[in-house]
Image (cartoon, rainbow, N blue to C red):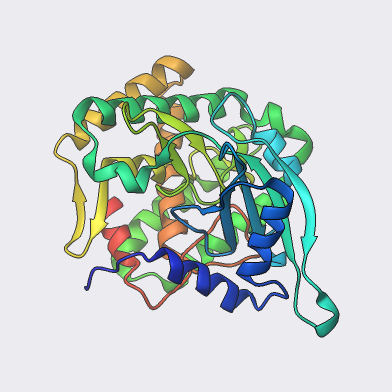
Length: 327
């Protein structure tokens, strides 16, 4: 499989071409210049459904232009904001003249968190820096577990969550190659326990990948978790694939674990258990929830009706390579 090289300008051009919006990149940049002044710097990694720029004389703000189909829920963002690793944000309205039938773009302002995306730093991290990243990731998940459903009780729609999860696993049962069905069955057997209302249901990032985690360039410590579009309420553990992304990476030759991956994994779980005090039975459910998240992310197609369970955007790609590696 050939190695795909990311190109920033192409990514930005693709967004405006595919969005078919009434505003061009020039008009978006002009909006930013008039409002903030200073230099406009496109974010190093762009999202599929947005154009993001770092702005202001001090380069301390981020302005994001998003398609109507991928709006940020600022109430969810406020809920996610806890500590220093989630940016605060606000809605700035819309840009674009829709009189010709082209859609406008929603505009959001967020504080710029320090650090660089993990995907840009991953291969150059030293041993201690990796441990720092894993420790902070354990803290991020421990905080989510401890807050649990109490923090989001007013947002929990248990029947809808059950319907969503069962629909995804029906798809997996019908579509995945036979070799994956034993693990699908294993998760299906425990799925009722994950959505019985007693297991923690948490605010879940829809795409907790290595592009949405920021790290300190010198220490490897996590400085931010960004892009909370489509966050939703799901059982704890559905985004633990984030740990796997810290322990290895996919390249043209397939998945490669880092040399000290098992040592890092042990450090993660030791720190998580220390912070949460989870029991052995709870750990078993967490492990299966993690498998559920990997199956959904790497084995089902993307569907905008299922926020928080992003799936695979292009079913023609070799997405099953991730299932082979991570399961």
